[in-house]
Length: 457
Image 1 (cartoon, rainbow, N blue to C red):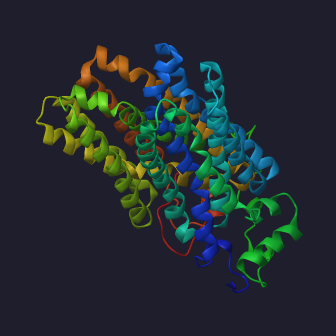
Image 2 (cartoon, rainbow, N blue to C red; image 1 turned 90 degrees about the horizontal axis):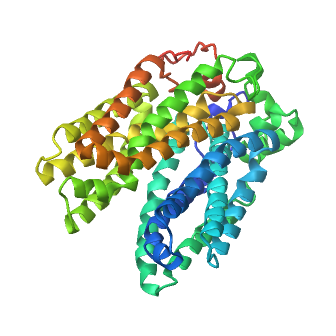
């Protein structure tokens, strides 16, 4: 495919290369959903075999989440310093090695450490893969392709539950095979990612013009060079990650962190303690299992629906409406916890579908709102910050159910979602239709196609 001279990367048509890159980049979210979900099934065998206390069980269950918190920021800094392409495969190789090692883990401490390392590798992949995808993808397709990565999280979770149920029948060592099973998808993704080129934007930013030209010509055609790329230095002040909180980007980082936290705290809590919450809402036995399965499917559907709306509605309206209406669904659950089971399942399903808008924007907003040299670090920092809230919220759910009851717990979840709506009304920017350098600029550029002006947060 050849792009006519003068065209920017942001205006190129969607090619086979872009589609393959999006598919390969989705491997990280898939493994995240897989790793975080399969431990729940495996724990039914791990706890009695290793004689785990409640605290040890909680730590092992949360170990990958803690690792993601640590790895996301580290991966972001590393990908900005050493490039996207190198780390694009190294992080998954670490997952393979640690997943295999879990098979022989006979000590809770050793199992905790291995899952912590796996979480760090998964977390590191977020800023690496999303930065690479964002910097190659044309503006028209950037939102749907970045948002599509979130869909793969739920696909990975669904596959993990299926694999886990199958491997439970292996016997007492079923949990070992479950934890080691992440090796297979991770190996496939590493092989597929091999040969992926470095981001030409990162290369140009580092002064490696010849290397950037080679990548551009390989991907876009022989007539495309660095001269066809926008000069980001003209669009914003120079900023490094140390200065990011003191610059105009500090406000953007604050919004991303708050919005991301408000988006995932209720979701993680409901996803992690779905059976317990449904049981408290008088959905027991088979009905609770059906309800949990339906909610998982609804989360997936919600993300897919949001992908079709992110360009039509725009980022700002989508995030506001997603927070608002999903929060109202949780509010009704909190006010009427004794409603008929059909009403309860409907409200849970509505929440799961509507919250999809905020879920896909978790990867779109951070990658669009920061310049190339700190994009990975910014995504990693925001991801790490959001995981603090998610871990705290998930940890507090059992106590909230005991102390406040299910009604009070749902009211707290509703308050968090509605807070996200209020914050978004004041701070959410609009980046629809912008080239990547325009979206990252602190001063909005004048564009021929009228779109909503991005807020300077």
